[in-house]
Length: 418
Image (cartoon, rainbow, N blue to C red; front, side, top):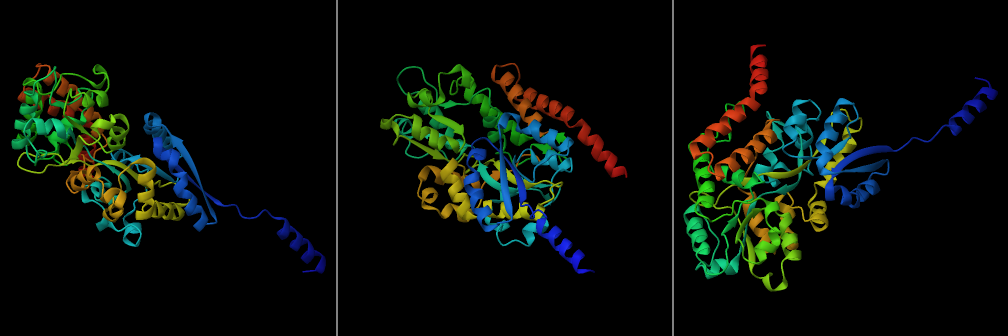
């Protein structure tokens, strides 16, 4: 090569654009999307060749946006997914399996996660997500009203719970109830249904299992609370405000989630701040189960930066990041070691969730589950208003679930014949 060409080649190399940073697209929802940038800043500092671009998505439009992105080949690298959405996107082939990455990672120790929460991310034996925060429903209750009814501890079984509810109902004063089970929420009936030993769906998610003895027992308890006047036949929109009604003693028990700890601290009057507590769900014979809710972090299969995406998940999964995330959002961490933070460990209202998280159950891992859950709400409301008996409601739920699962059965039978 002549000196002249050597000089020209050197000039061309020196003028070429420097290599661009890897840009990781992270989609997060609601409050999580507002604050996650405070956690990713540390990731960018330790990974100078990577920039994290966070797109905040409203919860109400997130599901449609994710499906649209999949169809349009425009999925992000990493996303927050409600764990009931994971089966749907896994069946579509949108998500990257994570078993191999977890097996070789010291930052995501499987045994440190609450098992019921971890199981929500496993579809047909394959892991597709890492729990980011957890949600379980349990009891919020008025300790002072329970004491007036003659009890110094929350219920530990249905055999204790029902006499408590009946005693609260007998307390003198203006019209009041013992428990609020909003008719526009399916979660209270779902949580009671999870106390059954039998699964909600049978034959590998092919058919409904609401006629099982366990679920019918749960449904009978749910309806009894309305029939005996222990719960009002009302939705959230038919009362002034749940926190206000709880404060004035209109009801004493409420099945709800961890975000309400902060809400109750903010919304209840100062004189009542020592008069409410949380407790794990009671079961038929002892401490009961609850639903394994929350959100997880996933890597999309079409991501061109899967190694960097996984490294970001590792950072967001560390106990330090989870504790900071709790401070920013109030979202409960999915790892046991993250609960060693005094802010969680020494808070008795959070401690009830720690107890409950050891006994949470994943919801059926089928893409159709959310549609089936809607039928719980619709059929449950009919039964509450006396239009269906326990047996008729259970039969109707099975019939509706079976119709929704018809395509799933057809697809599974077709795969079996191949």
